Image 1: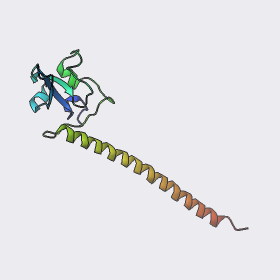
Image 2 (image 1 turned 180 degrees about the vertical axis):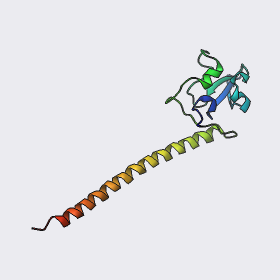
Image 3 (image 1 turned 135 degrees about the horizontal axis):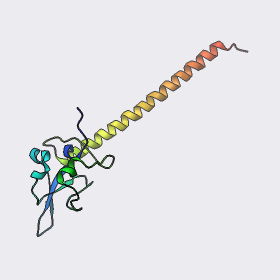
Image 4 (image 1 turned 30 degrees about the vertical axis):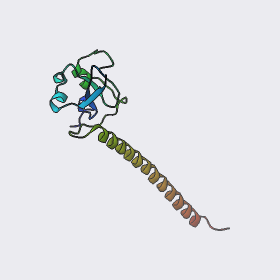
Length: 136
């Protein structure tokens, strides 16, 4: 069965807290237990997308944390990448970009192959037409 593309399964789901005196932010990946049940994330942490698609600390909590990461449809507005334990955010971002470029290259190669087939068929028809039409 295919995994749903929801924040709960996304590598970029993270939690963030800020230092009171400096305001400096600290972001971390969720543990497996927290990823399974968002209510286990302590209240001084705000959930967020590491790719800055959404941030619980910026917008008020309109829905529960569970709904935030497992129910809200962010189709076509996010950078979903399947969660891989122990992988850093930057590595996932680079791998995601590489995967996207590879998919674009495959699509481009498909168009090139189609164009070559069309050219080959055109040459074949040209050669057949040359033999069928007598010279004048």
